[in-house]
Image: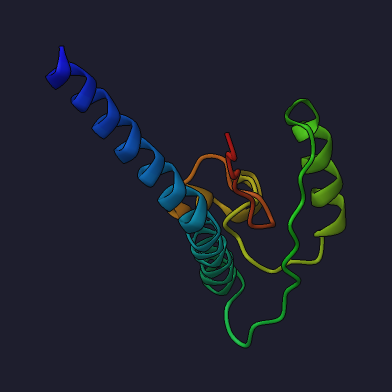
Length: 115
């Protein structure tokens, strides 16, 4: 019985230490993750639009159910782009499939799940 109580105290102590470490490290991990996301947006934008970098990076947090509406608004805002990666095959003569994606858009878009 004493050994069980000692193990329970040790477990609680270790749990408290772990929680304290998680709380103190969360901010740094979140900052690093957001930095990684920003680098990804920059890299995809350079690959899509080319050099010199001439684009606007924004973070949008729309509700999940309004994703189609947000995409349609973004497509209207980005009509003057010059890449063939998101045009239909009829417009570019079969070159659209070379992009590797079936869902390509005239903007860089990816979802960040915070849950």
